[in-house]
Length: 378
Image 1 (tube, rainbow, N blue to C red):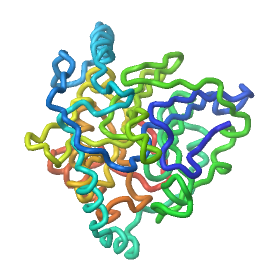
Image 2 (image 1 turned 135 degrees about the vertical axis):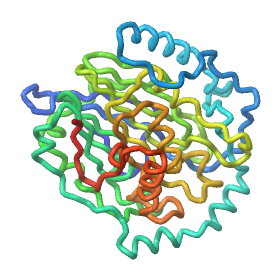
Image 3 (image 1 turned 60 degrees about the vertical axis):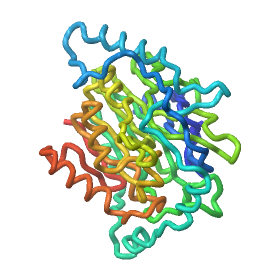
Image 4 (image 1 turned 90 degrees about the vertical axis):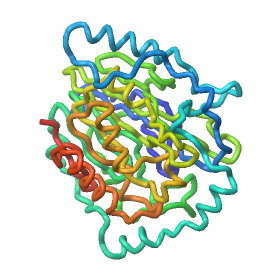
């Protein structure tokens, strides 16, 4: 059976579930479900990154091309990154092993959290500035192109690639919380519920395999799934901080299409980061797996930045990730669904558009969708 996030804010990180239908005659012959992160709870004290020892592999200025021989270079790089376990702590937990990551002490974090004015978010919702919610396009979803993406709100996606269907980070609950009597509540509805997903996805599905991945692990078959780094954190309660690993994901189809899913991630913390260090993981992902045909990159839940920059990106930083991974087309996610932070609800796409213009990029190279909208790769 499929296990959507009916009441949890995030499934465990770096968990990849292979789901195959029992009836091979169904249109959706393969369906996979994966999640990238688990929700953060109580902050931990600041992490000392002064002894960080990065991989000896230099960061290239651009992702490798698809020319002959590059596959060997990619695999050599992946093996070097795979051998680097600096994100593993001696107590069995995990960390972000880069100077771009820092955390405020508990007292400072909670003081900032309790005094943050969320009126801009609430006011913008009351003014009708939330994203539109569209009915699913059953025609497109039933007859998909080789690569297409449907935004289900927040970071939830329906990816269809070379006949396979992948549910990314599915949330259909009213609240983004481990319980439904408290926590951030939807201000935009989901475009569908679990039992309203397209025919052929749910009727005859059962988990056939569950895999747990570390950064740079690959799951290969007709499709390649790669568990890749992200800068975030996990917790289910007060005492399990960093007990499970967070990640981004790469999906590669048999036709050569490559898709990147950022999940929840940060890029450069503003707290005790005087050098303005940036997370090196995305350039590394671009080296090994780029360029990407399509990417879904977080753009929201960042204000105030002194509080949330250690776990979330700004739209401007999202464009840096778009560049780092070598994405040809990106869609902004992680916004427009729950009030998690203080920015106006339509601010992330506005800032994204301004940054794309400032960088001289076509506006549609990195843009946003309406909830429920499907985009087909051309």
